[in-house]
Length: 269
Image (cartoon, rainbow, N blue to C red; front, side):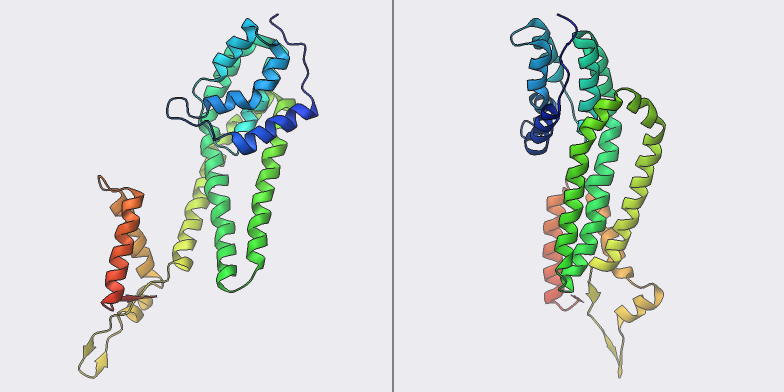
């Protein structure tokens, strides 16, 4: 048997989505990354298509266990297209499926991570955090609502991409670059907004010249408000570009320097 006679049902989509939401990252490894998880997600459907203990099933399992790595938020779009092709072409479509997986995992990784991994958490996280600082409990529900909306999108996109099949790729292809660039630009904009609103570090040191106390912080604010937080972020960004400086080491450096300067009365909150 080379062609599949099985048609996916609503229950199949539910099973795939459950496995994707709760177990997709459990099989991650440095050799094939999400490959084994991808296979586990659709294995019951492959068995229904090709039968148990058949050469076609073994071939499909080997192909789907190969290297795969994309955004957790958009991976089911690839899965839906994959299943649509295999349902129609059977094992003869495996090479096409492998090519589509290879071609889509990079662009979808960029788009999914930019929008769902950075942009949405930054926007809603900043709003919710500001509400929390002000003692407003609505921020908690706003954050939960955003996460639930993302989960609903992940649940719905599988069946949509399955129905659209390969045409979805050709329809979206010319928009991928523009969407990625827009998401990246918005992410940079939100990071700038976070620097200005969430980093509350001020220069406490105010030297006295005769009877006049010179406030360095006020002088900096007259030049450009929130300039000191921007300089701090710039210094950390420069530090992360140095060899052997990881994000963990940078965090410890910031903590130690902040505690020391605060104890000396140089900076304050």
